[in-house]
Image 1 (tube, rainbow over the protein chains, first blue to last red):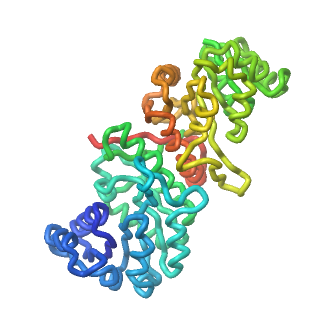
Image 2 (image 1 turned 90 degrees about the vertical axis):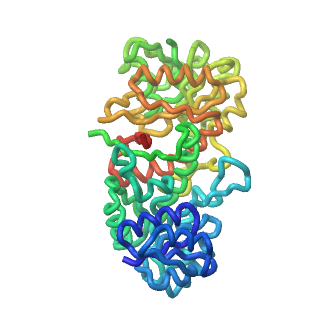
Image 3 (image 1 turned 45 degrees about the horizontal axis):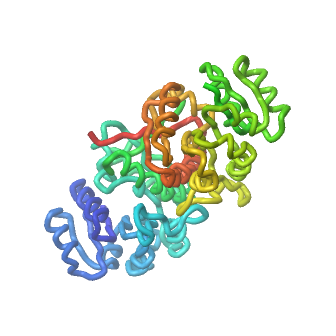
Length: 216
Length: 216
């Protein structure tokens, strides 16, 4: 499947590499064609990895991963082109982190709204599915690095889009894929960051995840 | 140990019963002495269970559980009496839930502050330890009802108070007791409610908890 990865940061590069390794064609989109970080990534990721502008990446993509910093998320989708988002599933991996007030970061939208909802309102032609924003990049498509099956979440208004993302996640070994409900449930996973970032401090590593344990 | 449980709701009654069953003396505090809910609880909980006003409960207590609704938390501590809080550990089990905007509830303080911090600022004579607010009442002091060891958190400024609470939690079978840091880390566990409440919906039960799984 041809997949767009919008963003050249750690999340974009890590997801892009994993998707290429799994046999997908990945076009990493950047603000400008010829972005050197994207070019270096494509060189290392090998066959199946290409680069271009955000619009180049989104145009031929069947599925789009939005891996921008939260504050740029809407601008990146705008640059990708509404005509290239129409009817497509956009996996929103972003978090609305605000580093302007020091560490740990706060959220620039939370509680009564979420970044995912803002994006879905701004881009009604796309099927936004919030997912993978609850854990560190290294584990997003490599859940079996953890010694036990753990949980990942999908939030979105379109059932088919969530099913598509869930199937892709399952292909990477995710076992506890929890459909939280419509896009407003992204408030839950974006809020989790406030606990996640402190667990990173307490556990001394970002390489952890939560497993849901139910009473029998 | 003599323990005050401030609040006669589900959380207070459930914790009170578990504490009595474990051999502690529990005084359940209510707004007025002779509160009928508290009296019925004490009758059922048996020997070791007593009732009184918030101040009665706090006065002789070695440890205090604050089990009020979030919006009343500060008023309950005020009614308990600052002189009865001085130097004592107050386990803050509350969550700043705001049901006024419909379901699911939002938080009336979040992101850049927390209810626990508000309480610690308002009652500097007490050692506030945020804990147990991350899961349903039935499991708070009965973690072994779950088929696997799961996580509980402590946040607070006083190391001895956190150690005291952690020891009590361990006595009830808690295995993953995570010290998140100072009282500001309560923002993390209070924010978790936004995900927890949606997991309740998705899982169809409040009888679940999270287990932390680290990469080896």
